[in-house]
Image 1: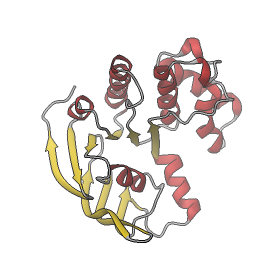
Image 2: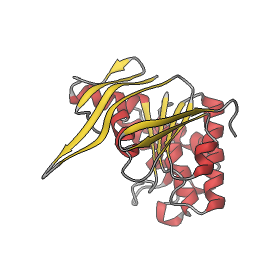
Image 3: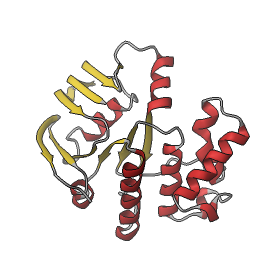
Image 4: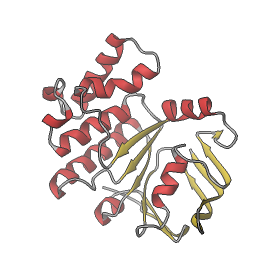
Length: 228
């Protein structure tokens, strides 16, 4: 489902900084994987490359059988739109839109009618237990509720891949545990391939597999027979 072959990413300024250094990685369909390491280890860079938000300096990335290198901008946008759902630490909701409208946005980009997109959005908001908040705007919600809206939005397209960038990092421990439980529920019911960047040991260890990065290289790859 996700394949990295000799992937490197260098940032060039007054000096060259190598964020990822010839990384090989394979994540199979339906795996739930955590990505850990100290700040500056290359975690977010890897997530952005896999999500098609940035391009590697060298190497090849394949997503669901499709190579990203050489794709035109429109084709790369299509891959992101159709195959990848994103969950961010700071929610990235549009403040002037209601919950239903925020969740509907990716569907409108796919050409769905307003009626069909709204029906799908309401279904997903019920799924994340926000049926009573559908017409509220983000500033009327708690942090945990905002993250639930963000998860519903990420799920709107039924993505085969779900990428989380510290999805519990901006929440208190109780709310973070609720969001993690919700992500696990999504994994069990939808079978999505999930990759989560996290500094939280509990989040990391709840996943089936943990990839550890240091200085842009993979230094550990732990698989678990069971996960929470």
